[in-house]
Length: 112
Image 1 (cartoon, helix red, strand yellow):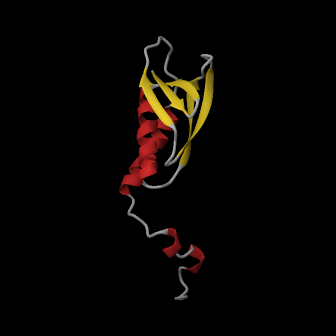
Image 2 (cartoon, rainbow, N blue to C red):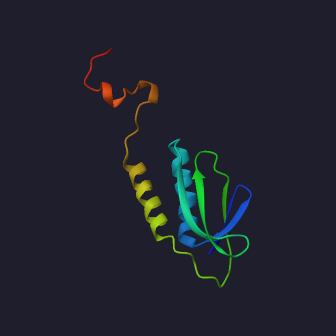
Image 3 (cartoon, rainbow, N blue to C red):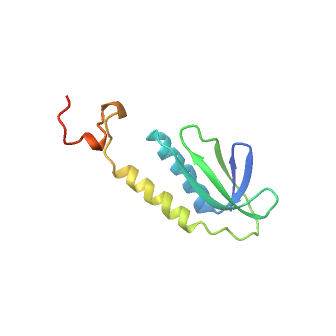
């Protein structure tokens, strides 16, 4: 289990989810994009909760080791989602800047 701090909020989350959320945030920042991820956590009061984190270039995120007897919350869906998105980011080809892209509606038109 790890202690995850996001902005001024603290929560406990399983090791895999905690490690992956940091790596996913770094991958999103490297690609200058963002995403929201919902994790099952234990909040500061020790109760089960859901936390939705906005991950982008400036995400205020930190993870630290913690020893506890609490069972890790199930985040298998979130872990698979983040891993899948990271694979997509790694496989994607860099696109031209947005101002150079034509909206899909104009793909077949010769406007230039």
